[in-house]
Image 1 (spheres, rainbow, N blue to C red):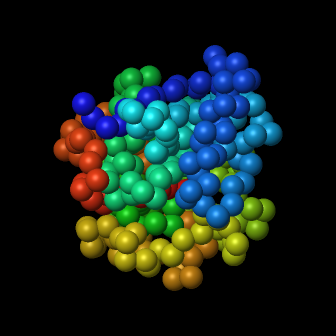
Image 2: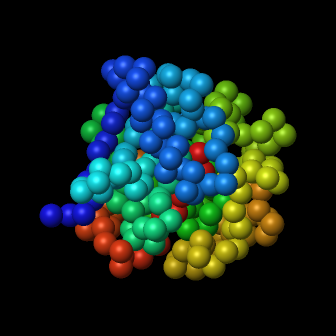
Image 3: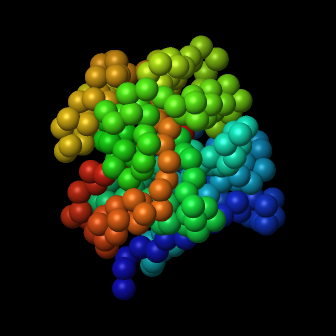
Length: 266
């Protein structure tokens, strides 16, 4: 028997009681407190908004024996005019004791196929990160990714999704008022100000992807001192995703290197 189990909750806030929502948020905050020095009241970590799980797809990994949460990812749906429903990758946390054990890939291997059950023809998605490994990981499983080496210019759909997310849904990404989107590069500047618990060093050797060309492409877009994010807009194509997930999905053990995804921002 595997030492971990994984549950997927689709828009749980629409069916759970306020008490059930609060209990889950408290559990998620307990794990998140091991990953970040402080916790903002937002996304699936919000104690002030009992509707915080209404628009989320929550994937939770627990120990079989203790039922303790060891990792989770919380993606969010939002609406874009003339495009429809878009998925944002959201917030991912992995307990420090089991990092570099393949957990993020494990979570995403449950999240993405689940989402595609509801959107069998595919769905547009967004991802915001300053971690090269994350950015290359998203590139590896999606299509029509901007920015990327294969998409030098954004399409009208890319632009519409990016502008809608960064203007109308800033609460989903915890973006401060001073953060601005460069519409030509999709670099979201000053999105992680000094003191932000989510700020990282994009040049940290542990946060790089083994695909060197793609890794350098994204890293070159980021400041060495951190603080900016790359906003990727991409299409989840079921055929490409199926091939990618099948190649990556494996039993989670403490010896499996986690080099496909790292914790994406928000």
